[in-house]
Image (cartoon, rainbow, N blue to C red; front, side):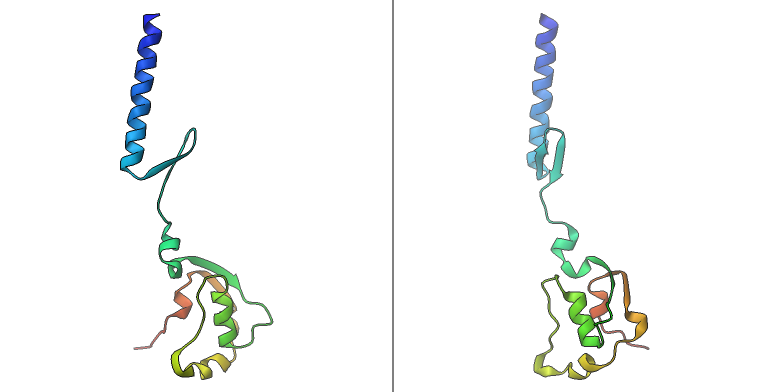
Amino acid sequence: MQVHWKIALIAMLCSNTVVQAEQGENKVRTDRYTLVTAEARDDQKAPLKSIVNMSLGKDVFSVGDALREVLKGSGYRWQSPDGQDQLLNTLPLPSVIRELGPVSLGDPLREYRTP
């Protein structure tokens, strides 16, 4: 009987240690055997760093259409102050850009300059 009492005591001490570690490391128990970190994922912290892989449909004709399609569902929208992007919006979409990815969401939005 004394052996069972010692095993029960050891089990209680171990479970107490796990609970303390959870609190110190921002862990949350979601199931009996599952611990998860309670913090935002990298793509949630910086949405433009999330990786996308997309194929633009035949209904996307211009660069502006493509930018709106890439940003769809991201919470961002394509707009420049004073309408300075009107020329870019109306340019025809090059066929090599119809397939994107895997690439971060922010990459298609960056301005690339040649040296």
